[in-house]
Every structure is written in C-alpha cells, then in structure tokens.
Length: 149
Image (cartoon, rainbow, N blue to C red; front, top):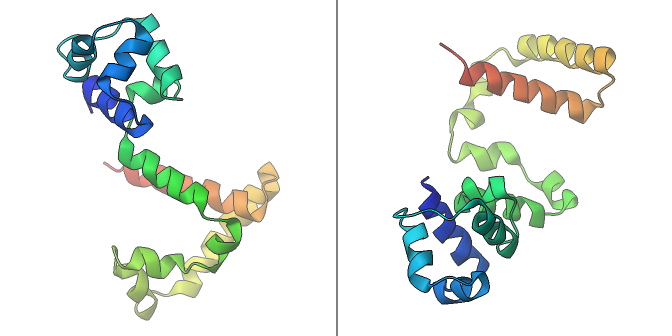
C-alpha cells in the first residue's frame, strides 16, 4: 500500500476529516490531500505528529493496513473463554475445505507422533509451555511454507 493510502486509511479510521487534521498540524487541507494522494509527502516531524494523532507508531502509520487492524481488533474483542469454545477447524474450513475432510484420507496418528516429538523437543530444549511450543512450531511451518522454492 502506498504511503498516501496508509495516511488516508489511518485518518478515516481515527474519525478525522482532512480539515481537522490540517488544523491540528497547522497545515492546509490541501496539504493533507496531497499527502493522501502521494503527490507530496509529510516530513518526518509531521509524520510523527500524524502517528501520535492517529494513536499509531510511525512504523504502523507507514504500513497502515485497515483490514489487518480490523482483524487484530476483532481478535482482541473475543475473550479467551470464547476462543476456547470456537471450533477453529470448522471456521477455517469454510475457507479451506480440506481442513474438514483431510482426516478421512491422511494417517493422522503417524503425523501426530512426529509432531508430538517436535513439540516435546521444543519444550525440553527451550523450556516452552505446551502452547508456546505449538505456536513456535506453527510459526516454523509458516516460515518453511513462505520460503519454499
């Protein structure tokens, strides 16, 4: 996403008009418009002021992704108790049907034993809890997937 789009999305998410942002930063509304269309860019001080105004870090402002922020906020709103009651396989299975059918064809016990050994190794070697070991293993799998070549 271009910086201009990030600035516009962050402003709208924060509920400000271009006029309000311009007034708070001591610039014209046209300046805000030019930033948001990537015609020009704010300087570093103005960028920091925007980040503070929108309650974001400078890095978050530069890479602002409204969809990601909305997903993160939705996850934060769901209590741990509710998360435990959600059948995540069924939820994700709506998007990825293989999640609801693979157990009919895959020798799950064979893979489960190998994965259990990896989890136990992570827990023993690094002292991770069950949950932390699972999250680390999931992240390693994601890394392997993303770097396949």
